[in-house]
Length: 167
Image (cartoon, rainbow, N blue to C red; front, side, top):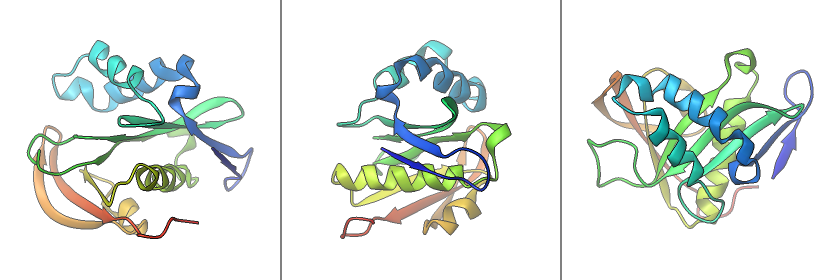
C-alpha cells in the first residue's frame, strides 16, 4: 500500500494483514491483551477474527511495519459495540506498540483505514473510545453520544467520509 517517513527513523509501511499471515498472531496478541482479556473474549476467537481479514471485504485489517517489524494495526469491521447494532461499519482495534507511540503512526493507520472504507463503498464510520477521543477529533471524527463499554465510559464517535476520494 504505502510507505511514509515518520518523525525519525525508517519509513512506516501500511499494508494489508492478508499480505502478512505470519503477523496474525501478533495482531491477535495485541488485541487480546489490550481488549479481549477484559471482555470475556478468548485468544482463539481473537485469532480467528484476524485470520478472516481480507483486503476485499470486512473485516479488513491494516498492519504498520517499520524495518520489517510490526508496529501497529487497525481494523474495519461490520460491528464492534453491542450497544448499537444499528451502526456499521466500525473502526476498531487501533493499536500502536508502546515503543512506537507519539510518532504519527496511529494517524497514518486511521487515514489508511478511511481510504479502505471509501474503496469498499462506506459512507461513514463509527468507533468507541475510552481514552483517545482527541486523537480521533484531530482526524475529523465527531462525538455523537456517551456510552458504557466493558472498559468503562466512552465516546461514541462518527466520521462521515468525503464523497470525493481522499488524496
